[in-house]
Figure 1 (cartoon, one colour):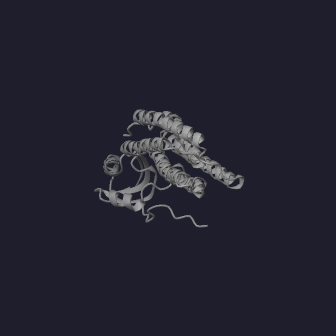
Figure 2 (cartoon, one colour):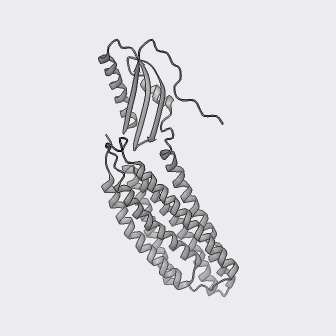
Figure 3 (tube, one colour):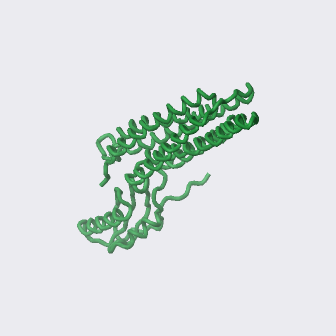
Length: 307
C-alpha cells in the first residue's frame, strides 16, 4: 500500500516558501544598496528558491500515488517532473550569474559599500538557509518525497553560495577599512564559483530524477531472484524487470516456474512470493506470469543493449 504524504509535503513547501521570500528580500535589499554583483546573483538564486517552492506545490497537487483509470500506475512522476523543473531553474540562474560577471569584467569595477550591519543581515540569511536545508531534507527522507529532497539540495547550494558571497563581502569591507581597493574585485571573481555551485546543484537534481522518468532498473534482478527462490514451490524465475524508485514505489514483473499441478496451489505460491517482495521492497506492486514445471529458461533479466 502506498501512503499519500502530500499534505505534509505541501505544509513543508509553504513554510519554506515564506522563509525563502524573506531571504530573497534581504539579499535583494542589501545587494542593490551595496552594488554587490555576487549578492545580486545570490538574490536571483533565491528567486528560483521561491519559484521552486511554488512549482513543488503544483507538482504535489497532481502527484497522488493512488492509481486511477487514466493513470493506473499512479501519478508520482509529476513530482519527478517538478524536480526537473527545479534543475531548469538552476540552469537559468547559472547563466544569469555568468552573464552578469562577464559584463562586469568588461565594463569595469563598480565600488561596493558594505557595512557591518549589512554583514550581520547576511549571517541571518545564512542561518535561515541552513534551517530550511536540514528541515526539508529530514522531512523529505522521512516521507520519501523527491521534490523535498531536490529542493533541499537546491537550498544547500544556496548555503554554500551565501557563505562564498559573505566571505567575499567581508574581504571587500576589510579592503575599504585597510584602504586596499584591489579587494573590490573579490565580489566579481566570486560570482563565477557561485555559478558553478548553482550548476552542480542542478546537475545533481537532474541525475537523481531522470532514471525514474526513463524507467531505469530500480532493483537488481539477481537480488529479486534470490528472494523469490527462497519461497517453497518456486522452481525458477526469469525475465525479471523492475522500475520506479526504491522506498517510494517500485513495480516488479517476472515469469515464474512453479511446482504446482493446479491453479490454486500456483496462486498460493505467487501470493507467498509477493508477500516476501513486499516485506523487502515495500511499497511495491508485483505482476507474476506463472509457467508450468516443464518450462525452461535461464534468462534472469533482459540483455544489455549494445551499440
